[in-house]
Structure formats: C-alpha cells, structure tokens
Length: 225
Image 1 (cartoon, rainbow, N blue to C red):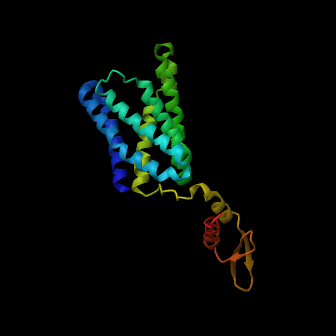
Image 2: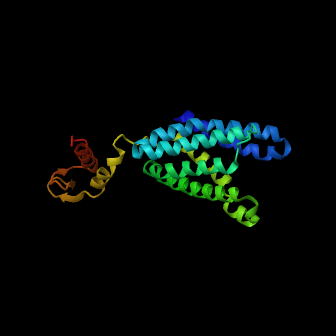
Image 3: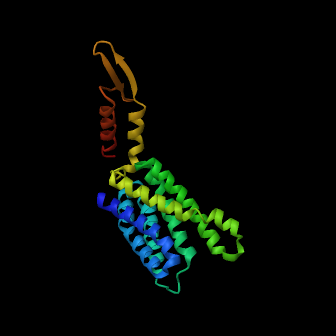
C-alpha cells in the first residue's frame, strides 16, 4: 500500500510540474503529464479492488471508467484523432462519483471529497463539451476548479495510502451496517458488583466491552441463512 501511496504522490508532483512546462516546453510538459497519469493507474486499480465488496458492479464499472479516462488522456497527448477532451473528463467524473460513496465507508473525509471532485469533473465535462457556446466566466467557474481539485485528491489519496487510512472493505461489506448498528446502539449498564460497564445486545446477552458486542454481531452476520 505504501508503494501505491508513493506512486500517487509522485503522480501529483509530476502533474503539477507539467503545468508551467506546457508554456515553456509543450512537448516536455505533455510527456511529464502522460507519465503522471500512467503512475495513477495502479493506485486506481487497487482502490477499486479495496472498495469492490461494498458494491461490486458499481465500483468496478467506475474503476473501469477511471482507468479508461487516464489512458484516454494519455493517448490524447500523442495526438490521436479521437481524443475528445470532454470524453475523458466525463469518464473521470463517473469514476469519482462511482467510488466516492463506497470510499466513505473506508475513509469518510476522503470519500466525501471524492464526490466533490466528481461533481466538478461532471461540470467541467459539460462546459468543455459546449465549447464556445459557454461564456468564459461560466467555463472558469464550473470547469476551472477540476484540475486543482484533482491534484489535491491525488495528494490526499497518496497520503492516505502511505498511512494505511484506506482499509480494504470486508467481503461482507454489504452486510456491515447491522454490525456497526449493533455495536453503536448497544445499551450500556453499570454493574455495581463488578465495578465496570456492561453492554447489552438486543438478544438479551450481556458483554463486558463494546468490542465483544461487535464480535457477537459479526458472528450473527456470518451464520448461514
């Protein structure tokens, strides 16, 4: 995971460095940007694998859109005739909007920010597709924030991966809500004889700690249905 974090941070650094190069040395800037985008593919795939248990079809479709967006953007730097800019921006919006919700289960702040970036990417795709029909102020307002937000997201992703702040969701992530609910809503009572707190489950059993209550709820979830 740490290696993926390094790749994400390096991607953000190279992408940021490519911006001033676009004016001074366009070919060097384009090459640097393509490398930055390529470095983001492995973290994107890992993120999809980590979040897939929450919503497999949604997450893998979004991840495929994200990887396609990165590759499309790379190919557009080689001047492919079908490199329609609004297309890969729209795919990136589908990626962030698709993984943002499941990511909130693993890292709520980053997941929320991912949805924000996805929303701005969708707006950027719309104004980019409209082209000259959109006034400059609208393009700056709705399309301008996407690149800075994208770079900030990549940095945040890299830091989170380095610190291990994006744990893989369990295979039963779709059934994880009852576990969290049981642990968070466990009634707490004080036993004057034992001298410490007890937690009660809805089934009537009593536990000495919230962790015991959580483990009990997890075992219930794993019982064959």
